[in-house]
Amino acid sequence: MKVLYFDCFSGISGDMTLGALIDAGLPLDELKRALGSLALPGVHVHADRVLRTGVSATKFTVHAHDHGDHEHTHEHHHAHNHARPHNHDQPPRHDQPHHHELPQADAHAHRSLPEIFALIERSALSASGRERAKAMFERLATAEAAIHQMPVERVHLHEVGEIDSIIDVVGTVFAMEWVGAERVVCSPLNVGGGMVKSAHGVFPVPAPATVRLLGQAPIYAGEVQKELVTPTGALIATTYAQEFGPVPPMTVERVGYGAGHRDDPSTPNVLRVLIGRAASHGSAHGDRVTVVECEIDDMNPQIFGVVMERLYAAGALEVFYVPVQMKKNRPGTLLTVVCRPADRPALADIVFRETTTIGLRYYDVDRECLDRKIVEVQTPLGPVRFKVASREGRITNAVPEFEDCAKLATAHNMSVKDVQAIAIRAYQS
Image (cartoon, rainbow, N blue to C red; front, side, top):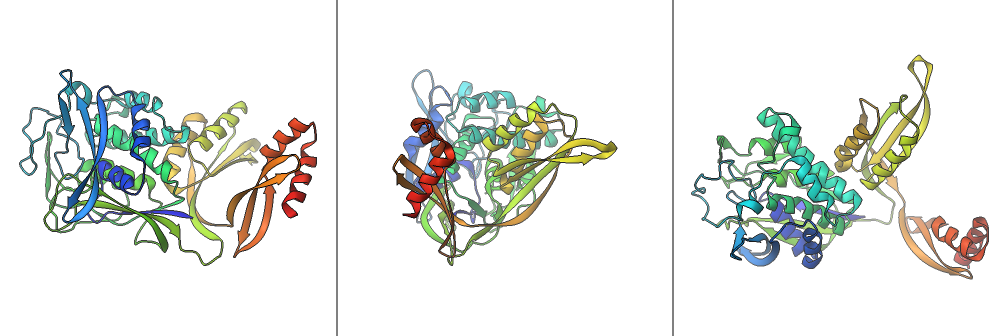
């Protein structure tokens, strides 16, 4: 099992996350292609090697060009990537150096949720990645709406609706798909301390939006009395982490360090990611999944197919329907979704949006899976992929992929079951 660990000893932000994943091997050109598809005029990104308290790290930076072709660099007023004050005429914070801002038309636009969704739909993310990114911004909008006591549909994302934050979120979704980790663990989060300034006043660290997004994640305050966890960082950690705690048993294959803007004298201002494989003793692996379910007795049956497709596109591990008898002796359908814990909010949103249910149940369960791999077998009819499952090094099952068999059956005018039998004999020989 592939494992990714976020080591947040100096907090986490969006640019630090991308810097760390680039440092761990994410190809910058592929990230640029994905971000370029957002069609944000004059915006480009780059990554530089920097030192943070003697630690070599990658600094991810967003640039834009104004109409006079003067380049502007977006730097963050706060510890990492926290939002600007709502009033852009305010002077910069005294604890940070002054930097030029991106052009107002490009960088400072406070976009509504539909506007951000439209940008995401133009991105090069996969279908599941687009759903994930939209669900993340919906969480941000919900948090800001609660803080400012306004309906979600009226919220303009002052805190995270600017270009740099959109790039941070969309880029992180792309990067995490590139990593392909089956298990994501995060350390307790060092949120820093002190106060943070905004147009609404001076607030204690962590800021209100950050606190709301952190939810039940474990946090602590270290020696650094500055804001270390930004709203975007809190969103990334709580979206992707399936659990919080120490480094799990794993063999480390890649290490990445993502730099924050500030260089502290005592603690490296970096986010560290560890990527590798779960330590295995040759047995099947277990993990934690979430089960989401509800009963439905008043929906057009044709919709169930669409619901299943959209749930799988958004990252569901399993989706299935079971006929049930409901109150008043009505026939109904039990919808069950098995997913990674971090995917539950996005999948629950799809169920509420696409079905007639008005409530869901969800609970976490442990599961145990056999070790699996795909092998290609040459048969007299052509190549067929097999899914091979094993436990403690002993193969327990080998099944030919149905799609491969169906394709060969059509090509050779044979039945699928005959092709399957030929494939199995080829595998066994």
